[in-house]
Length: 502
Ligand code: SF4
Image (cartoon, rainbow, N blue to C red; front, side, top):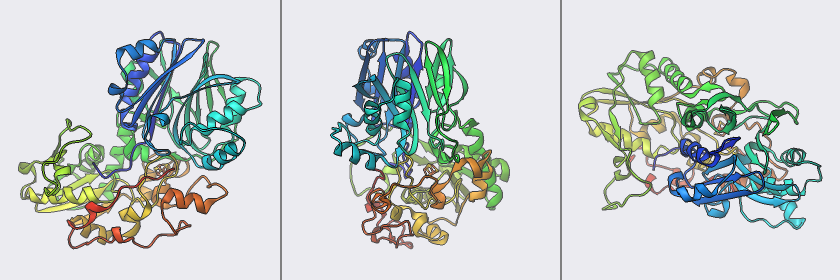
């Protein structure tokens, strides 16, 4: 319902615990924000891997009986949002296969930019694909590897893929965590008694009572087995490109991601935003929940008090029945309601973490004005999003990114705000240690750290869904994006949603 980039996926794995599958279930519960389309758990009893997958939320996907069948001291799990491949059960993970190297369960967070090429070659060579996810190429490459030994076959397979990947792989007797050499997506290591845990975010460790040990480093392969924990670095070091959007929006603020507290980083974004774009105002209002941390920082640095001028209804399900299509903005109102006593007669600074299409933001600005606000100043705690992501994040096509096709003044008019300001790129990267050298900022710059495959034009055309636009040049404004800036209520509800990825 909200105008946000969509989360990618969450991965979890545990080695050496009698309640492995139940703890994986809890871990996935904590990672639910990273994917709501499907959930799956595979467990190994040392001889055989069993798997259970279903569409929907974690609490809908598993029953006590299902979990009881997933026996063994080792398990891995996945929550999925389909950044590549359509939403159907066959695409749910873990992918589990039998191969010459034994059984393998694979969970992936990220996006492989050369999966199409690899798949074409595998199909020409006789491979039969069961899913249309990018992840399945890894399973085929593993099964076909001539390397001797499971770990060597894994490394051989993974060496052939490019792009963003945090993998948790499980054989019948070991659990392996792998992070791509650029380190796009997070992957943490935890300890629970004698058990080892791998997970996308540390909030999953907190829920099961595990201790955060460290991150899997970019380009590192970590193997948990009866022999203990082993680290392998099979690839030469590469430029780090950790996804800065994990700190802006994706990750939970109670997590440590890339070794940093998301809450602290996000609050610092807000402080910097306040210093960069001062405004005379009476109250700072966060858009819940995404703007909360940045609003705290903004209020702190500006001295303007923060109040909860918008209240979120947390009990709205994924779907609701609209009584009348003609009720405008019902979709936003069902989730957010303005607090008139806080807003009436006040100059309001409205803080959010990002704007994608701008459709929700302008409805919220209108609601705030409708509740009596004298002025509304929109402040965004990241730079304008101008380019799609190819590394595991669901982005609309570029022509739908409002900042890619409109000036700041046009955006202000479209939103109906008195002023609009974004955090600068320097402000963003300055808030994270090693920001300029360790982080990917491609969706703000259009500069991509990992090259695309041989057939670059076709890849971009497919991924960007820009028929007839075979380059990364800034597109002309599309008719659907040609919004009526003086009448923010016109047109944009009809902008179709689109997904990047295959
Ligand atoms: S393009 Fe943006 S969302 Fe994608 S990995 Fe880079 S920073 Fe993250």
